Image 1: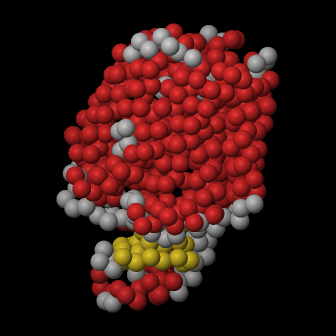
Image 2 (image 1 turned 180 degrees about the vertical axis):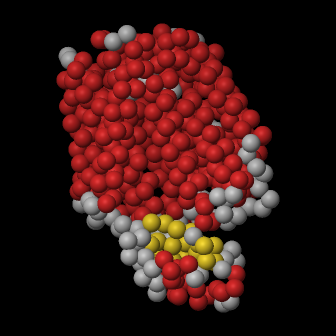
Image 3 (image 1 turned 120 degrees about the vertical axis):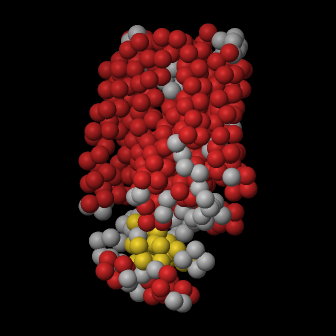
Length: 447
């Protein structure tokens, strides 16, 4: 990577981290502090927890398209400004309705597509995968930090301080965009970072892809439903000031346990088995949460088991979807994937609140088993995923006739799929790195 590319990757990762921290910090504490708001009920608290997901799901893809028309930076700054307004609205709210409105407005700043498109503009094809990996790691870190930071900030300053900190993070992200992120000279067409409207229908026709799109919906449905009642159960035996430490220990241990499982699943090519095992871990966590009503030890064990399974699945699902997406369609597939993820968060929080109000913890846990059971069945019946990697190649300009490059690349050992953009002199490949003929591939360009 050049200095400019590294600067772009780091600064855009910071934008993602600041924004996702703001969204995630609310999760472990909103159910506790919202009880003091006028008009609060378990159902409306659940809506407040998942409210941002409705607007994110609705506007995720349109914001990406707008960035093609208006420019990347203006759309990203607009989205962050909307997030800032939503944070201030929620901070000043004295009713649960005001918090819900603020959370919906926060979600209206759906800039993920625009940020990834800007990353494509600022990085060369051969370095883009590394840049996108930095963003993915940043989001994972943001979630873990938010689970710890949210309880600490809210304990010191309440919901007002929590949402004000969200606003400050939006300002910090805007300053990063203005002063640190380079301005692209040209827009680059990258099929892995943009949504093709004509390709959306094909995603829903691919059953193997659809399994994992339902999977990310189920995972975030369950996550939001659980945060309707988990904070309250923790408060029965632990002071609110201790919640941050509890989440720190649980998240830390689950990450330590998750990493060997990811390495094992890839090296031994047992991804399907480990994937199904992690979904079963969610069911075990549900049982422990039910027992956690009476036992704090069971509750803590349930949190560890849940986040162990959750973290593995959260890290594995994007990789699985990327492997299954036909070469050159990852941007479209991930657009649908992200929309499904946020829709799951929205419905999980909302329906989890209703279940909690009318069925208590038992009702909420029972609700979580429904999408998880469907997902488990889909995972057991899925095919063994292909062990391929997505690569983007900048084609050598001296190759001559580009029209025949696709066939010539397909003949290389280890290359399984090829999509060539002649005008951009770019090839999108699916390869098996264990059998790939690297010397033959390098004759055609840089990866």
